[in-house]
Every structure is written in C-alpha cells, then in structure tokens.
Length: 82
Image 1 (cartoon, one colour):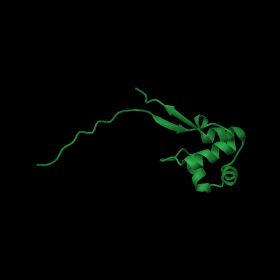
Image 2 (cartoon, helix red, strand yellow):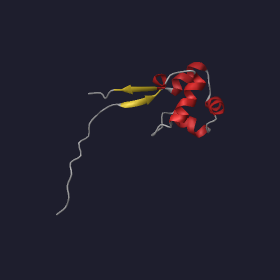
Image 3 (cartoon, one colour):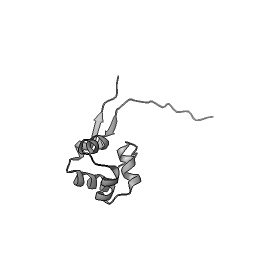
Image 4 (tube, one colour):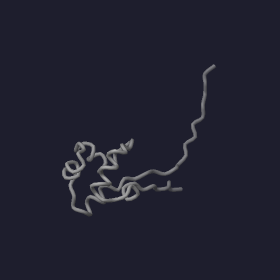
C-alpha cells in the first residue's frame, strides 16, 4: 500500500532584513560595509538584498558593531496577511 501524508501549510509570517534601509540612510555602500566588517562582498550583497536563508550570528554581530545598531534594528518580524 502507498504511504500517504497530509501537508498543512500555515501562514506564519516572515522575518525581513532591514540592512539596505539602514545602509542607504547612512550613505554606506556594500563595499564599505564589507571592508569594515571583514566579510566577503558576496555575503554583504546577499544580506543587503534580503536573500539570506540562514543567519550567521558572527556576521550579524559584525554588522551590528560596525553600524552601531541592535539586532532588532536589522531584523523585523512581519505577520502574515490574512
């Protein structure tokens, strides 16, 4: 007999990165942040574009240190629309 399963999908919201907004408001480029954090440009580019699937806490800490901001300034939880 074939095994069957039921997949229930819930809308639970998403976490949005605000790095681009913060950097743009300060006039900082991705190259500058990359250099100041000692992080590869490609990594900063993904963060800037909100294309990060898994957070690297060390990169997050570096960004917070350089930008003198809190984690809550960079990450925002948005509830799902009904």
